[in-house]
Image (cartoon, rainbow, N blue to C red; front, side, top):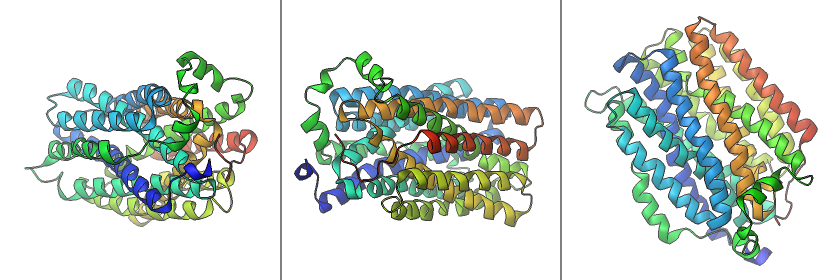
Length: 406
């Protein structure tokens, strides 16, 4: 089995290829948070309507994670990766021409479906392609491309969206670029050697059998833990980060100034990923994830009660550092819970359950804001959500550091 793993040179190529796709995903999600703030001004949308845009995106991600997780176990990781990349990039380009809320919601569903399918498939592909002693680090480094995508999104938002000639529509056209990248990947991206070697017969299993396997005695505990963690983390992440520019504006900052502060906060994501990449093969997945989620909990609460510019910037940066570091550990931890024949299905199902949280998080913020609930109370609720995730990992999680994937 070990001979089937790719060389260090190939690992770097695989990481760059898959990571660039991940970067484009992050750029789209990051831009959405800024576009919500712009749409509030351009279309005069209410907080509840803005919440629906973020939630429809997550509905698509839930469907995509479930469908393409199963598809990747049946047809291969590479095929699923390419298909999802094309879907979200084409829909992103078309959304630049949306003429109202209804058309934008339809396109955001397909964007979300592509995004939701690509992320668990890409992490599974990379996880299966590298040796156990470096697997966690490489998957976290893959996830670090998310921070680069968010930085690009923040730069686009800060420099281009305020320009009348560009605006949010021009930003969405930029998100169509991955369609051309997918054509390049068609010829340069290898499929998972683990999948090719071990899954030739198992991929013929029915979809129902694969889903039932996740709830069997062998995997029930891992599945329950992952579903709780993914729901709580995604619920809090999308509730907090999609509304971050709008929250800054509610705290008294103009749109351009808010975008500038979010850009500075976003830069803190990179050291968050890199520290997790360094720790995850030394400390292990379980306790690194618990530690960074605890940091997220504390930072979220303190950000919610902050009112000065310096406090918001400092605790917002800490929130980015710990929360995105936790995401890196979560993506490394998730595929390792299952065997090859159900790995993408299991990762996709966990992500799909998480996206239900991503639907409810932005909706909850919009509804609570409409009822004049304070920002501190809203962020306090997100801190409680993270606490539930921490408890589930402590009591239900197994350590999977450097175990051989089977």
